[in-house]
Length: 258
Image (cartoon, rainbow, N blue to C red; front, side):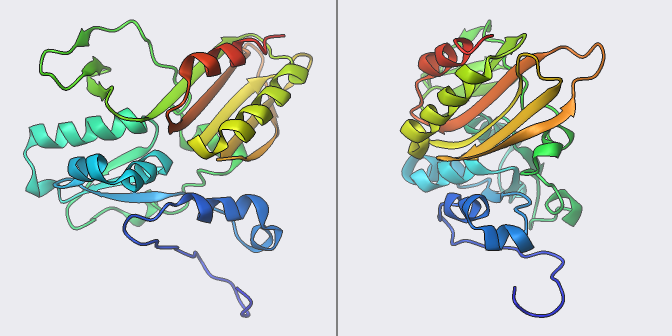
């Protein structure tokens, strides 16, 4: 990075079951790195044939799925359509917000994995328009096959995963004097268990949306564009992590109402 000229991009390839969090955290805390580079996205390649097994015996595999912005499901030719749907269901149980690509020999267009700008606060919704879609919890449960899952939006969400995503929404404004201490306390106390968090919130008497994201205990946030005329002012947050207390997080978030 000290050489003359500039790189178009730097791709950091970790070992097979490495935790991507330390690499991402560097961009939150190292000013020298932030001055010359930005974190674009975390891309995970999942083996369609063996992913389900890895999710059972390798916790690091769950971390990689949970952390990813883009997931390439590779070797789809080695599994049946039913097996592929099962793999996708397990991925969605852990991370409902990553962009999925089915592939053989990782044949995915380069623009689908580069220039995603998934960590740019001002482009969170442009890149991921559905990442803050709060799920409807009035659904039909199906435990008939003994796997402990329910059908949700056409996919099965598995309850046997210790990794989960929590999305919460509050219509109206938040009190910043309540929300900021709450989110800071939550990430400090539960940071090791929180892999990613993101949110767009409406603060009382503030014409601009406040956007934040975090990796473990590292948070980054700032005001962004103004709320548009007629745009519904509401606050939405998402947490992806391991063994999170969903009830406590929802209760704490809702208690920040203005």
